[in-house]
Every structure is written in structure tokens, then in C-alpha cells.
Image (tube, rainbow, N blue to C red):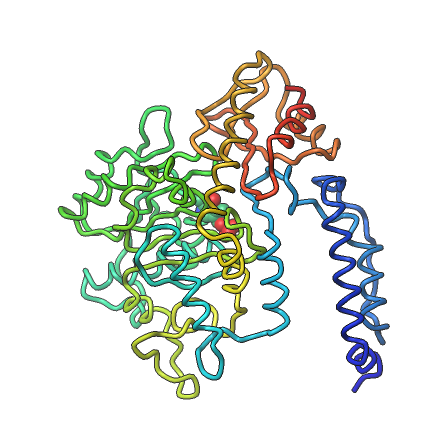
Length: 447
Ligand SMILES: *Cc1c(COP(=O)(O)O)cnc(C)c1O
């Protein structure tokens, strides 16, 4: 064995303890770490010809790279839609690497059985009675849902897309889809051009269902319903869209990457009413479930078609069987047991814990929204429907405001354009965030 590797093995308990101490120091310093670090210049170093072992690697990382890492796990990183990592999720993640299971199949380990339990718990949390699988993020969850939809559409036209490839154009209808939908259509060979934009309701990002119905009358299609748009967290009327299934053949995919967490609070569950009628549903977990990257769940009621698309055909891997293994359900074959952090988090905090996080984050968004609305220097661009505040400065430029905020180290918010207006988004989805953080963000913005 390479000498340094043998030394690390001999010292393993101490090295893990040192790593734990270092991680503890990082977490204890989250509150004072600049929220968005000005990327420090770590320079470049050559590949070590003969490494110096784990302690030296940790010292090199701590010196060269860690100072430039953002406090994205902390309470005032409000850019994009960014969750943190709860204590239980972090422990689950450590143990995922410790046990290093290959969750591709159920032979020789109960890891995949745990994944099934985690999926069932998520189904119960969200009120979705469908089988599912873990994937790396909402982009992948959307891609898998659309791939199954593509196969379903093939069955309507009498072809197996899986075997023969696309022989007919596929129409995909959506009001305000996330950018990952276009990316998925590109990957799936459907083509970005075949994403047909459905008009939205006046001053809304939600699809006009009457306009959608007119498109559906033209033939079978995939409909992407949006349950939480990134700019204003607007929701399509999923119930009304689902009701159209009685009259038109279409595959209903719901992108509920973060908006799906509305279901966790009785006060907001109505926003996703009807989503259990969907054919496939995407929910991100590294956002509002607050598990570490990379994690999302993909639900579908047509696992038979899913297996057709993703079956990993090889004598050495075996046939899918009645309860298909994950390698026959998702793009990966070998895969990390990314269900374990989610399992730990759900086990530790349960339904009530998540309800509290979701409702507190929404209350924070509403508080920020009210303060901006009451100030003559700011304009709220949409009502705060859930956990995102979309606003713009009245007499300053967005880049100027955001640069100053990032430099203060107090908070990190990201820009967007909404209805042609340069704007700022503040997205609340971190378990640590409290009203005291809203105060700090307001002070830093000068609200
Ligand atoms: C974040 C997001 C995605 C993409 O999620 P990733 O986890 O970054 O792949 C897709 N749809 C919506 C609505 C999102 O908010």
C-alpha cells in the first residue's frame, strides 16, 4: 500500500475526528462568513507527484480554497432557491459516504429498501400516492418525467420511442416553464423548438387554461404544469388542467421543484390541489427539504413506461422484475444512496418539523415583502405568494444594489427580469433563517 495511504488508514479515527472538528468550526462560523465570498484567487497548483496524506490535503484546502467558499448553507443566502442542510441531513450525508453503498440495485444490501421507504415517506409528506426514485436534482427529475411522457406519447401514436427513436414531433405545452424544461427537451431529442408557450393570465405567470385547452384540441401532447415559478412563485391551476384529461389525451407533468412544499402546510396546500392526478411530478430536495446537494425525487404513476425507457439491459445486471431496481428507473446505473440524508431528515423532524420550516420561511418572505412595499424606495413586482420576494429599486440600478449587498457580506440575492423589468429575487428556503435575518437583510439593503 502507498505509504501515506497506509498511514491514513492507521490513523483513520483521529483523522475523522480532525475532519469533524474542522467541519464544526466551519458551521460555527457560518454566521460571520461573508454570505457570498468574493471568489478569492487560489492560484493554481500542480498535481502532487507524491501526496502528503489527508492532514496535508485538509491544510491545503483550508488555506487555498475554503476562504473563497460562500456561506450558502447559512440563513441569508437568498439567491436562486437554495436550501441548507439540517443537522440530521448532514449526518445522513456523512454516513452515505461512510457506508458507500451502490444503490443501483437491491442485491446484497438493504440500501435500496431504505430508498423505497424514503420515497414512501416523501409521498406521504406531499400527499402523492405514486412510486418514485431519487435523482440528482429537479433538472434530472424533469428530464425523467418528460422521457416517460415521450414514451407515453409514442404509445398514442403506435411507436416505441425507446426502440425506434422519435418518428413524430412531440408537442410540449407550458405557461412559464423553468429553463430545465428546454434543456431536457434538447437532451431527449424532442427539441427546444417544440416547447409551445401557452399564454398566461393577465399579470400572472400561471397558464391560461382556456388557451391550453385550445392547444390540446390539436392532438396528443405533454403538458408541463408549473407549481411555483422561480420569479413570482405562481401556480398553474393544476386541478383545472387535470380535469381536461377527461376530454383530451395528454401527459401531465408537474414541475413542483420547490413549490411542492406548499403541500406540507395546510394553509398553502390548496396551491397544488389536483397534482396527485399528474402522470409525473418533480420535487427538488436540496432546496426546501434542506438536504445537501445533490438530491431530488421523481414520482410517476407509469413506472411500467419508465422501465421501458431506462431499463439497463444486461445479463449480469438481471431483469427489472415486478419491483424494479433504481438502475432501471433513472439515467444512472451506479448511484449514491442519496436517499439516506433525506431519510435521516424525515426521521428526525417528521411532518411537523417540515411544516414549521416551510411556514417560517414563508412568514420571512412576507415580512420582507411588506417592508419593501411600505418603502417609497422599492417596488414589489408581484404579491408574495409563497417564499420568494420579487422586487426592484425605484431609483437605483439592480446590479449596483446587488454588488453593494454582496460586498457587505450580509446577504446574497440574485437578479432576474420580470415582465421586462430588471428585478431582484429573495428566495427563503433555509431551515436556519429567522426574522432576525430578515432584519439584517433589510438593514443591508437600506429598507
Ligand atoms: C430549481 C428548479 C429546477 C432545477 O433544479 P435543479 O435542482 O437545479 O436541477 C427546475 N424547476 C424549478 C421550478 C426550479 O425551481
